[in-house]
Structures are given as structure tokens and as C-alpha cells.
Image (tube, rainbow, N blue to C red):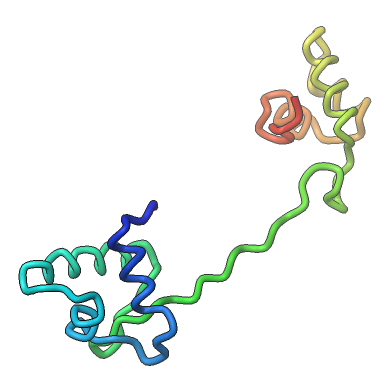
Amino acid sequence: MTLTHGENKLLEALRGQRRGVTFDGLCAALGLGPGERRLLSSRLQNLRRAGRVSRVSGHWRLLNRVAPPVRSRGERNGRSKLTQDEVLSLRAFHAVGCTYAELARRFDVTPTTAQLICERKRWAWVL
């Protein structure tokens, strides 16, 4: 979800607040008038649905989001049986008519793995 300018300003107002901020406190911090309160409420709900903020006991808080770990892919993965060159060779053999079972025996993988590689559902980034 991309954030609007107003949502970014809202997140900045929440940043650094340990206990959170009440709705009225946010309105005051952002300098909003009475007509803009409904818009603020809508933006807070959008951010809550996106998992960026939470509301506990009437106080809005910014949630700490931890990035998921980066996984090694391809031959940098310690469990990989193939290299990029072998994947290219496997696809080339399939293009000239080898069956998945033949490819599996030749490259020491399962027929399902050979099929997924040929269909680019595995190793899709290797051209």
C-alpha cells in the first residue's frame, strides 16, 4: 500500500510516542480544524488495516515492523542441487524433447522439480 502525503505526516506525528497519542492529541499536533477530523479518522483506519498503527485504550500507536529475513536463492542456498548453468542446460534439454523423468535422472532431481524449473515456477530469475 502506498501512503499519501497526509498519512506520512500522520506517521511522523506518531513516531517517538511510547504510550501513543489520543485522537484529539493528533488533531492538535497536526493543526487540524474541525472539518479535517473526519479525514484524519479515515486515514487512521487505513493505516490500521495496513498494520502500520494500532489503537489501545484510546491511544494510537505506531507499530514496529520488522522486515522478514532475506533468503538466499539459487546456488547460494545451501540446499541447492543445481547451479544456474545446470538450470539453463535442463531447460535446453527439455526444449529439444527430453521428458521430465529423463531430466530428473540426468540432473539428480525429482521429476516434479524438473517440471517446475522448465515451467519457470522455480529458478524463474534465470533466463
